[in-house]
Length: 274
Length: 274
Image 1 (cartoon, each protein chain N blue to C red):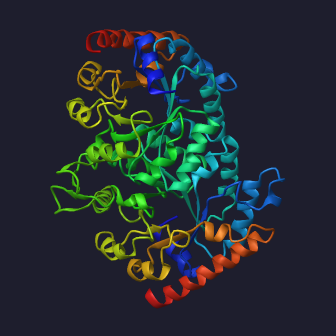
Image 2 (cartoon, rainbow over the protein chains, first blue to last red):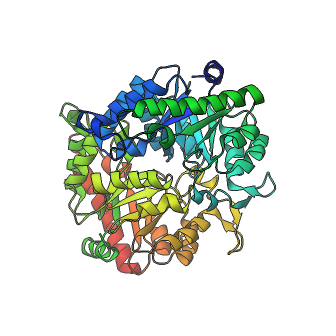
Image 3 (cartoon, one colour):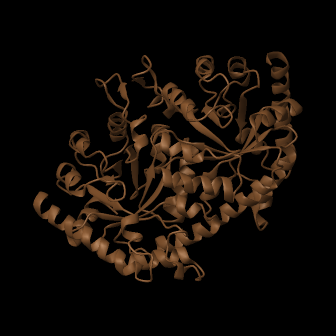
C-alpha cells in the first residue's frame, strides 16, 4: 500500500485507527475455547466487527509465537482474512545482521504478506535496510510508550553533524537518510505528547505509528493536535481497550462500539485539524 | 544451566565454541531436500557431529520463521534433540513492552525450552526484565559485529552518573543493575577486538557471546587474549564456517572437522590464558 492509498483510506473512513491484535488465550471469551482455532475465530470476529472504523490491523507477534507453530497458523489465517485495502503491521520489533534481517523480511513480507514490520534500530543501518522492499514499509522504533523508553532513547548523545540531541532524535535523523517517507514510518508513544511537535520538526512527512493511547494513558486529542500533518500522518493504535471490551459472547459487538467511539473522536479531529 | 555448570562444560570439553544453526534451505546439501523435514535432518546431523567439540548451540530464529509454522516445528524438534548439558541460545533479538516481552519469554523458555534468549536493549529495563526467569539467561545486545554497530552503539552519550561514554557502555552499565552475572550475558562482536579490554573493566564477570569470528573476520586469538576471565567468560560463535563446510553428502563430517579445528585452538588458548 502506498502512502497516498493509506491517506485515501483515512479520508474515506474518517479514521486513523489501528486495531492491535494482541490476542491472548487467557483473555478471549471462554466460549471460543472449545473451537478448533480460538485465536483465529476471535480475530476473525474482531476484524469483521471493526474494519469499518479502522485503517490498520497490528498483530503482535509475541502472542502468536507463545503458542508455537499452531499460533503462527492462526496468524497466517488472520492476515489472509484482512481486506487488502486495510494496512497490516507485523509488530515484531526485529533487527539483526543483514543476512538475518533478509530472512525476517522474507517471513513477514512473503510468507505472511504483511504491508509493514516494526524494526528495532539498535543494530544500525544494515539491520534495517533489508526490510526496505518495494511496496512494503519499515516502522522503526524511535520513542516507545513504555517506562523503559527513558533508559536509553532519551539519553543525550553527541554526533559530528548535529549539536547534542537525544538518542531517539538521532535515530530519526539517521533513518531518514536510509529511506524516504514513502517506505519509512516511526513508532512514537502517546505517552510523550510534549515531544510530538519537536518530532514533526525533524520528520514532517513520515507517518507515525502511535501506541500507548488508552490502557497506557496517552491522550488522542493532545497527540493529534501536535502530531498531525497534511496527510494525517498518524496511525493511532488501540489494542486491549477494543479487543477486550467485553469478555462475553458480545465481545465483537462491544469491540465495534469501542472502535466506533474512537473513530468518531478521530473524525472530529480530522475535520478540525486537517 | 548455571554459570558454574557452563564453566564445568567448558573445562570438560576444553572448548568455548557455540555452533550457530543458521539453517537455510538454499544452502543445505541437495540430497536432504527430498526428506520430510530437511531442516531438522540437517540440524540433527550437525548436532550429532559437533556436540563433542562445542558447549552451546544457537539457532537463529529468522531462518526458521521464514518457513512459516513448518520452520517452527523443525526448530522445536532441533532444540529437543540437543543434549541437556549443552547450553541453548534462541538468537531472536527480541524486546518489547513488559506484557509482550512476557509472551516472548513464554515462547522461548516454556514452549521451546531454550536456556537463553538474545534481547535488544533499545526499549529499556521493562522490556528486558520479563526475560529474567529462574535458571534462564538474558543475552543482551551490547556491541554487535555488523557495520551498523557504528551507527548508534558507538555514539557518545552523557548521563548523570558517569562521564561521557559510548551508548553500548551505558547499556552494559545499566543492565548490570537489572541482573547479575548469573543470569545476564552480553553480545560483543569479534569485529571489535580492541574494545574487549575496556568491556572487561565494566563487566568483569559476565559471559560474553561473541559472533563475528570467521565469515565476518574477527580473530579468536585476539579476542580471547583480552576477553577471557577466570571462568573463561566467552562463548564464541561460528555458524557458516562450520555448518556449511561442505555442501555434499559429507557435510556432517566436514562440520565435525571444522568444529574440532576451532576446539583445538580454544584448548590451547584455555591452557595458556586461564
